Image (cartoon, rainbow, N blue to C red; front, top):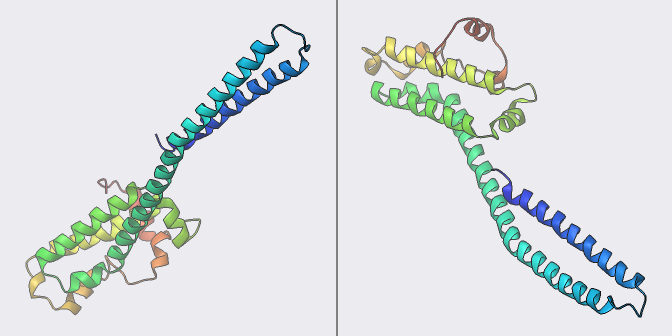
Length: 210
């Protein structure tokens, strides 16, 4: 469970607070008891024992939970770092896909498209993915829109490679760029999260999972 150390830490604090309240109640009872009361020594002994138990409980819980909370915080930091890297690799992979394909053989080009598609999936698995989208493209950016726009480009690049498989290796880089121009248009990266007529049309047609 995520944040279990943090939740356990809060529970331990609440339990400690409850024990403190009990200790206060016992102390109040001692103060209110008549000086000659027979139970006074017993209550004093119980309070001393309770103080020792409370101190041991607090020290023991802090000794366990503080390292756990620190470890979870470090793990969360590393996860966010990995998430940001995965997002950046997927985004730049699509941004520079046309240039990379223009100088690649058919075999290399197919591997490049497959690798970028794989990085797209990895980036979308992280919980922080929507946060990176909104930081780069604004509050209107959604996972669905980015997924469809990216899939549209990757699938279009794959179709170009398949339809030109027989001649791809003999094409010059500028000829390859011309054939990829429609599938991979050179445009502002901010357009990656803006709807387009082509995307709206593709939403009406069923497609295989990306």
